[in-house]
Length: 453
Image 1 (tube, one colour):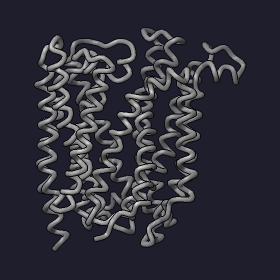
Image 2 (cartoon, rainbow, N blue to C red; image 1 turned 90 degrees about the vertical axis):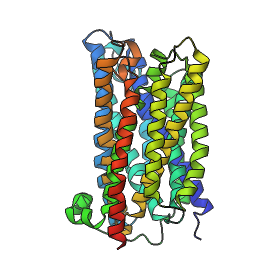
Image 3 (cartoon, rainbow, N blue to C red; image 1 turned 90 degrees about the horizontal axis):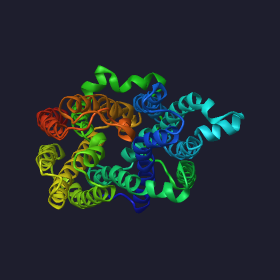
């Protein structure tokens, strides 16, 4: 039986973990950085305060668009040149530099460079923050979403891909745990955001430098295609030829919408509605993520021994059950804190198991049916289903529910995510959407049978 080599495991864990920490910082911490950096220069109740909030919203929207477009272009280029290792290494090096520079986009630093007062450069800084976020996303998607993801496809085989994918699907939660639990403390220790971003940038860049000497492309990787292949993955003939891949994209989109319906609001809900302290929700997060990761390593091995598409039924039910559990646990009065933490945490554990398992299964199936000569070209299509569609639809559903069922408007830092107090109905909606994935699985199985014949 073929195995994933120790060196490849090391590269996957190192570059996968560092990449997910960087993405988690961008998705979770940049908004906090913008708010806390600019709140002393603007009044959050005034027009300038709204500009800060609009900046964060714009960052999220443009980041999703840039990530998708760049992955389409970079993936196609890596196929054309028949090279992943340079894209990964050089991409990580520049990605780290842009992360470090982003931490310098504060009114105080920009004003000192231009020789002006800090209050005179707020609008300029907000503009630079949006541009800087897009530049970081450009190189992050170039290196991680396009090249690194294609490298994993090139260097794995169906016989063990499910286990590799289960490990890979845990890394975003590891990044989330490190960022949610550690960066706040590190920011206090280092005396601000700028040193934190510089340290993180240096770490990412050093990772890229190491990649120059460590990465090797698959011997089966050949040069293929040209720039007209940017739209390769959207051609009707390609869709018809690789139906299992595209049917799985539907599954990815449905699961992604279910997760995005509540995930962005989860911490705010635990703080504002369940009255959890930072220590309490961090403990719930940590226990649920670690336990869920251990369980899914076993499930990942199981997926290599049976039909991955059949197991998607199981994953859909697990995810939905966990979200229903969290919904009903939220009715426990906040005064019964111990019971609330235990039951809500157990629901979170089940939810995370379903989330990791579904992500691993979908990713493994897509890799199984990714054409070997077009692994790079297909990454952009994957991004449309896994990032762009869920990030547009999921939060829109959540905000509508929060507006109609939440407890009124928020104030302060929570405004960066939503104008309204999150409603417990976001978990109910996520559970229902997760069940809709059951309707997609037969399409995947029919497509598999057609291709196998």
